[in-house]
Image 1 (cartoon, protein in one colour):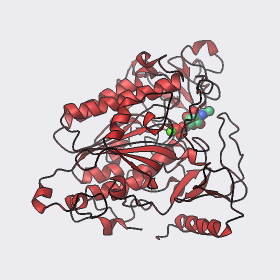
Image 2 (cartoon, helix red, strand yellow; image 1 turned 90 degrees about the horizontal axis):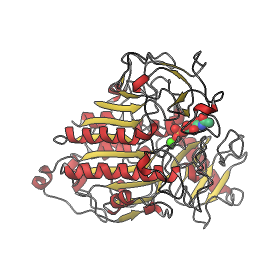
Image 3 (spheres, rainbow, N blue to C red; image 1 turned 45 degrees about the vertical axis):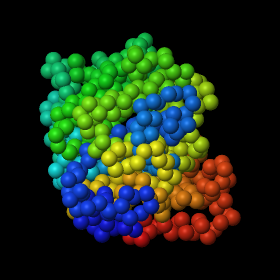
Image 4 (tube, rainbow, N blue to C red; image 1 turned 180 degrees about the vertical axis):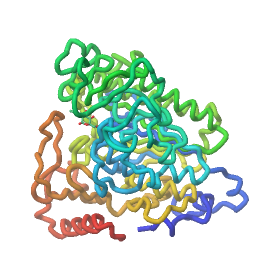
Length: 520
Ligand code: NG6
Ligand code: CA
């Protein structure tokens, strides 16, 4: 493994210009390099968007012209992985460079979870901040807020928030749209706070007098649930968790995309004169899928298709804003998703019935939650017009766990000892200068899996083979080792563990060493 310290170039410009690998543009002179400015960096991080959900990844039932435009301007990765098959662990790993399974309490978080990334952690935002960037997080957070779970006073500034994690500005949803509290939090305080409707949140017990979805289906005028989501009712939609108050601060689901996009556009406009890092995490296409009216009824796949179109619109808005500000050339955009797709995730939005042959996970087996590839194989697009040639495809095996060290290399960041222990500098691969595979990728879902270019190993697990609480998803659990040949035409169908004990042994060895935190 290339250790970060060794790999960090003497200057970011040397990093950008000095690599003599196939496809690189060759060494630039010192002066030429010195006149170049560090790029702005924008992460567009979708929620539950599958490998097969974008037109440029083969989707037929939905048009995504803006994402297509982004892909044409750079590199489309065909073998990219999120670190986990659900949101909280995936985001934790990406923002800290440490696998979430090393840290207790990183499973899918409640809306009143305390801050899961502790303030003393050196985060991806710190990497940029240290390099002189202004940093912002807008959209879905889902990594806890405040000191301690369940103890937050939502009517006062939260004692621990994103400002403690290196973000200069934040406008976020605490968890997911299907979890209370259903309000935006701006710089650690409820945005648009309504003093006439103090906010209370509990994941333990209902508030007397507050109607619940399970008792009052007639109040679910916007969307009914298919499983779970039968507690607090906000905007005519049942949620996970109990909530009281909020008044005019409560979000309207149909305006979430507009709201976060408007805040992202402001952030870009306000910071156009200095390098910025924007972590822009959309609510789309997570449940409840309730896009704005102008996107409704347009797609044959119903609300899930409409939500993909809304996501695409959002991407277009960001691209246009960068263009308008004259920043597009020198902005590095990375678009990806936190985990694989799911169809019915608890609301009666007819996503399943209306698929019409669409395969959200593309060719892969399994979905969100799953140890099969569909859980973590995600679209990933990188565009940086100034440095990255257009219209490329890369089949290099890559993981989001490496964004941390790669971004540190980009900005010549020196990482404090012990930070981002699982992240490798693979900047050259992410920028398309080589197609070097990561030797192995670790995937978290129920159990741990090891993916190499040719093989997929799933560590044994006794859990159920299918999810038994709602979504129709194969978990990938099996009580004996599973080994799949990823060169086979159909992915993850024939378990060849018994045919290839040597490969199983090798994969188990990798997993053991990674678990022990050993360097390779
Ligand atoms: C599940 C929710 C699901 C979704 C998921 C987290 C129920 C029945 N289902 O528990 O709707 O919110 O958690 O998704 O509550 S994630 O993409 O944020 O990880
Ligand atoms: Ca997700």
